[in-house]
Length: 414
Image (cartoon, rainbow, N blue to C red; front, top):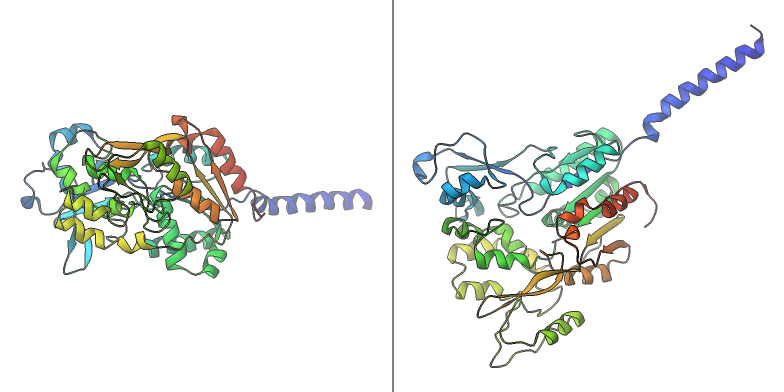
């Protein structure tokens, strides 16, 4: 073998070695954490003091009660209500589940118990993401969020640091619905901008509810969640749940916006909505209730009790937040203004008055947010299509394609 052939072979071997060395870097995926929204995580109950709760049968440890087991719900509705009931503990100064009832979620990393993210998970796995390596779910107790689980922010912070350390990559944080509130609270209130830029590569908000979601008023009025049947124990639980109050509309984003009306020309109402002018529409025939006094109104009308007010006080500061702070990293925000959505309510009959949104959350707040966030890419689908509803849009090919494109932009500006 002559010298030329030897050199040629050595060059080929070196090329192969270099190529194999760089493959992990060429195919590296930035880790993604999926933060679900209200009712977005499966929750499990363990009764440690069964003598206190004769309404409940003998159930196994870590019994899943939500998403609803319809058979169990219909047979033991008061028991499900107890599992969801919270109260303000005067000793701990925290909102807690009832004594002798322990509520848990699946462990960190699990994605199977986050049904709203099923389409996202399927797509990311097909793109080469790996569970508990580059793709993580963040289940949490949405019933007690956030005043009953203040440790959630430190937990999420630690998980992010752990993922970035293990992968050597900044992380993509994905918040859906109330999950966007978790993300917003973390980056605005619990870490500084340097930490965000060190650990977070980019943020995805889908149907964000960080400044309120109008359909939660309907939940309080009807005393129901996803099941339309009324059960007294469950209605009581819904009406004193911190996460329900947390999703009431922010006091300051659209000042003096009405929540309840009586005798009002709807054309005028929608015109006022478009121009964000909710200031002086009060006369003898109108009862106008805005976000600042909606809890007082619901209490006066008998929907909320004294315990409800104590729980509400633990999250009210979030509703008073008047800072619309844009994330300091590339961000994309998806929402829809094209579906009829419960936005206002008649103050006498409690009838729904529909406006624009995704069928669950109103869109006007996000219009305001997107008008102020100059470096965020906002996508308003503007579609009267149930496939672009509050949760279904997460399964639409159009959105999933845009999410993947956004992930792969690396550090390019939007």
